[in-house]
Image 1 (cartoon, rainbow, N blue to C red):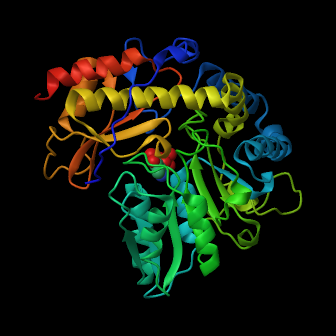
Image 2: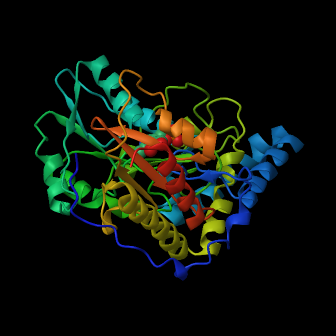
Image 3: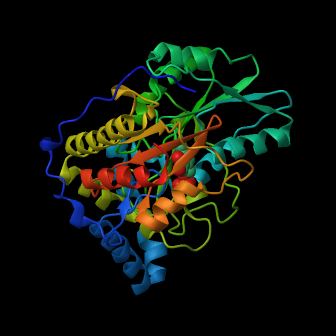
Length: 405
Ligand SMILES: Cc1ncc(COP(=O)(O)O)c(C=O)c1O
């Protein structure tokens, strides 16, 4: 278990007008949705933009696919590249981070005895992707154990990872913000050290987009995978894979299609991926509207407000239940995980939501994940612009009724 002597201080809630943006979403009436980190709903204007692009497709599909799609993707990549700090031609659009990670795996040749280095905070499906890919080659995954101490320094994290590097390490896979534990990891420092050793890094970044300022071209990773429905609140089915220029040539998709643009223009590396058969690209084409929405709010405002609410959740959970935060102020953003010592794990039901999570949803209309990690139960609270302190208060009241004091 990660140990914490750190108390989350009470935040000043008077700094924000909490209702200002709530009406931009159409969440079910009465719900307290505290799980943007799993599935992030989009504001209305973003869904309207997606609908607009679907409608445009329906007006003349031949014109849309053959004569418009290339330039629409290019314009979208310009907007996204500016937002995540990279040249637009280093990005390829995909429906989600899972597919992006599969592309990286399929394009990472491994031999028997090779190793892919991850750590114990990585997303379960990502660990499975690499486990499957390694097994096929007779290679193996290695899981570094990150520091248990919540006050560990950046160099402690970097050391924990590099202590598991061997001459057979072919790739490091690391989340910029971890899924079960909501920790911000020092990926820039990890990439820098990996470069000195000549080891490529693939960053798993779906939680980092919008939660943190990004400069992908300066990060030093070879690959960066992201879904955009999380903190950017772009539509479900939007995402990207960033590839550093020297790794682009020869990248192959497991879905074999035309391998070229329908417009007939000269081949570009993205063509291998942008056409996997007929599809509706509206989700990705609405990404610029999601960027516009958040920039209109103000990225600092978004980050500060949502971090403050996550802090309020942490403070209240700590006060009421002795919950133990897995991060301190500098290592969490808009979502925070705390261990809940009173809540027992349920043996033998992997992947099934904990009964407490189900009761919170069914009896109190509160969506919040209970996460089993390192054999203990944790609660992960996500906060976006549609959340208010009242949602956190409702969560505390419900937990008071459901778990022993
Ligand atoms: C760290 C991390 N990586 C990858 C994924 C997979 O994202 P998606 O299901 O959108 O492909 C998730 C989803 O929660 C995640 O948290």
